[in-house]
Length: 166
Image (cartoon, rainbow, N blue to C red):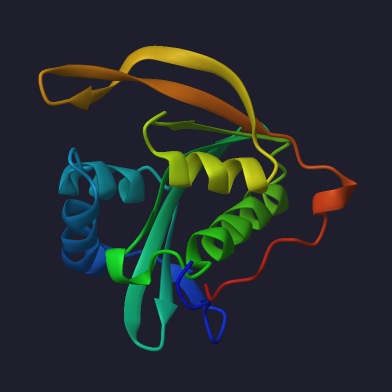
């Protein structure tokens, strides 16, 4: 593992003005990245879109949809040069706290089985595998399944969220 973060990142709501840097990060870390339209649609729909910053640098971001007591983590990403420093865990902890604060009693996500680092992150955070979506992700020449995971907050996770700037 690389060096840990010296200080906790700051968080703020994502805006349309952030999409240029978000797209640079997204395209650098994924073979099949979200489009600018995916992010702008998420903002327009009122999803919880957050930026993680260290100093004045955007180092990560996340998008979660929360409705009817459930949350769906749609995107959680850390810039390549900031990975393996604990930032993914911090950003996930923040988003879980946000979902809990919005009365979500269950949190779901999909993750590529080939993304072993993300699987490990979500498992360490308390997510459990609950299913598979066949052919969910595009890959060169075909598709890849998605592992469906669920997190059910309980007393062990109370207070694990962090407040961001609004």
